[in-house]
Image (cartoon, rainbow, N blue to C red; front, top):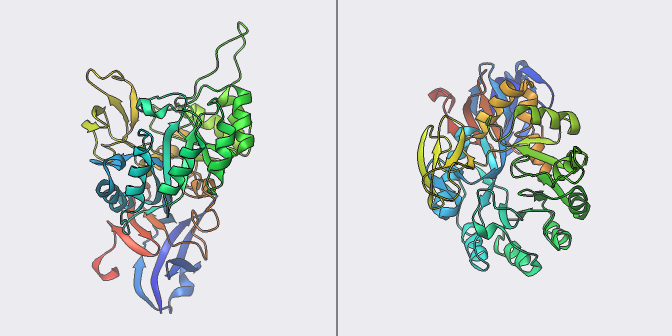
Length: 401
């Protein structure tokens, strides 16, 4: 007998939807997929009638700092709450993003996060370190700006065990290409961000192994104009011209103009564009003021950007977003005019590919992890499964549980 049968669902594929389907889950994986009519005699411990609703892969967030009133940088308890809460937004796996701390303190804190129990809810795929190997702070503290230090890189990799580390770097940092080669030995991508690198510096970083740009277009400055009237070629152009490099966007309508995302889709194709949230405290709570990283941020509307308030030196500036990944998917359909499969792909298959997990996550396919989300016609999350276990339910009737 199978563990779970989800019948009468519309499966969201890479580039299409298939109606009247059924999916069998067993041992944390998708065991069988077929037409619903072919499963009438199949026995399962749980039988769920989806009533035609969308069944898609679970969302994967590559860049997230906080959710509701919880912050990853506040320690293991907050991280655990984020893991447990993310499935209500369709997120089944993610990269907890950690802000920079002073040398030594950063590895100690990362070790505390990595060794804390977090075995319920969304799955941690590794830790994303936004600093200390950046050239510009943006909304980050001064510790984000660092210098080449391979010993520190190795210490952070060791501290994150048993998880892997994704480093965000700036291509113009002196000695960064040698560091990228060490970062890549952990078999994880290296992200580009917080930069005003020129084209050659960017290409050198890509040649060394950098393969993704996070919150693309935000804190990505052009080089200084040298020839009057000639737009300089910099990091943005080099990334757009490099077919092997993927990018993610904060699609809240403010962090990046939708025209830019459409341009990236034209330059890079459907498989290299991802959605991420860069979510701060307050994400999922709506308009209000929230305290994060020893400063107050204000969110003006649901899913909008977070802005620093008060007398802080960064007052008025962007400080992450209140976006959740399900809302980003809905925004992709509305703001970009893409299809439902394309919007979902940007939050599932594409980020899975960034992390080298495209053969096990990011698709509703036989043998893949049973990380799934059930969505209504407006792409609101109704239910969510991680490794075949229902971890969020706003849909299933008592007789189906």
